[in-house]
Length: 331
Image (cartoon, rainbow, N blue to C red; front, side):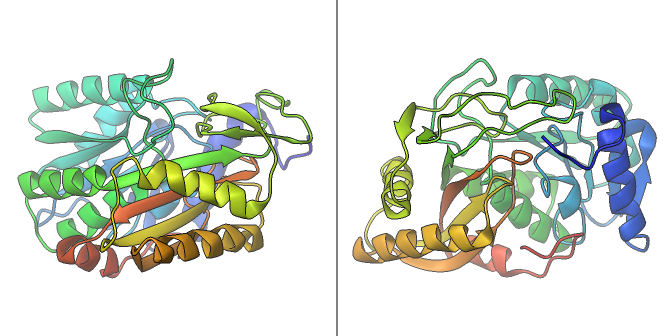
């Protein structure tokens, strides 16, 4: 597999340095903790919003640090949770009189790192709370998680709490909002190919020319089943059926619909999936109020996509509509 890589061990820090160099007026890079943070943070008038997780899912999460989104991100290596001390030091650097909200995708390593980092930061007088995201309907449990995994739906939680934080909401209110959004958000993904981590140099798993992995995880975790490749409309139908039936979403609902690319799929194909999903929702009496088609949470160069629905109400839709600024302009 051909990649633009120097030393695989320097892949993450070189990427982070590049992000900071491209955004010198708005972002600050702290190499010791893989930390990308807003240059104007901390701010005593707002809760600081922090995310971690592994690298390899860009633009999640280091490329959505900015006003109205994350205030900082401290990722680990590719597909690896950040070390506990990254979380601890980030919480201290982002400490605000209003507190720090730590967003955690539901994976065992991430939860351990953030739980321990939070405990250490609190011992130093930092008020921290953890909000766990678990929108993936593919599996209930796996070797990588305790319960459902946190995937692309995480972006809606980030956007909602980021907007509310900019408006001055306190830590308890942000927890309420974040949990509310997480509770009405569901995601399902499918892989057409595996991804290739720079340090490994070969695909994480093998798929035949006519095979897909339905319900794949963003680290290449096995999905619900391996299937034969079918037409795009059928794949969109299957993703949508898995998501709609889970909450469930019902006729009369108003939703946000996201088609998220996993890293190696042309955006033209994502819009083909979106077209079918939108048509099917309309036929079921479900109105698409907000639309998102792009790469939000990837798996390096994996070809594939995920479908996310969020049940909207006035509060959630207003927060999703609020202005936001970051290194990318996809939200």
